[in-house]
Length: 68
Image (cartoon, rainbow, N blue to C red; front, side, top):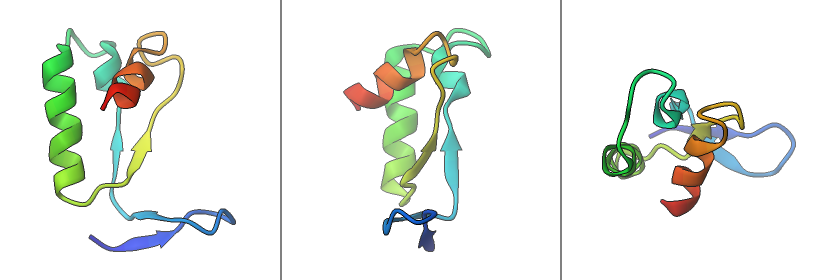
């Protein structure tokens, strides 16, 4: 997985990111086990950039990411 600098943070993130709106349940019911498996699959392929927002399931996606 190629990486790029993340703004002026001095950190690098993967060029490909995972949008996590679906993990918050806004696109249908996604169980926690499926959400964790999705995050594991992304991490296993080198994804280090996760896009989330507090409005994704009223913070559900962020809580699942935190658990992961």
